[in-house]
Length: 174
Image (cartoon, rainbow, N blue to C red; front, side, top):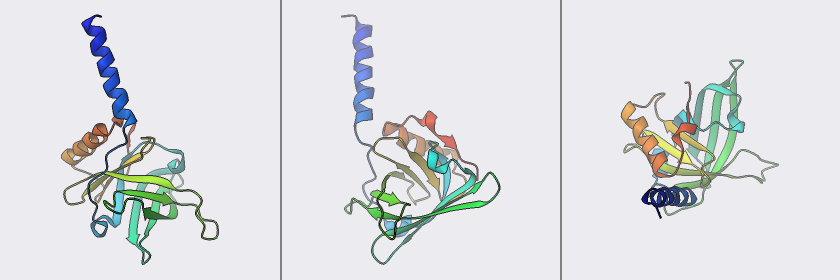
């Protein structure tokens, strides 16, 4: 077999196996440091945020029952604030890095939950990289409206390491 064909096969196998492996979350999240306001820096476009044209934020606060209150907001094309209230629950209590989030409630019952995995954090929680096991969704969040070039590059490296196609991410306008 030709060496070039073998190399192509090995490269293809490496790509395939990386994308079939679940993304790796951070080892430990200090929830007291994580809560607060985050600005959306970049995202993979999705249907549930299509109305958002700028100013997208997420605000998290700890509830007495151990869940996390979530308030996502943005400015729509008419210049109005759009807000979605939800709740997050910790799935992996050892690391606090795997959560599920719900924004749909029927009289307190929440039938739909989405994965929210923390794949990366800045050393002082100045940025967060969030994704899902299927890599369909992804966000880069920051404590400030902009990240430094170094921080943004670190976030993209975390995404690449976890099998994300960073070309799918678009920068968010604040």
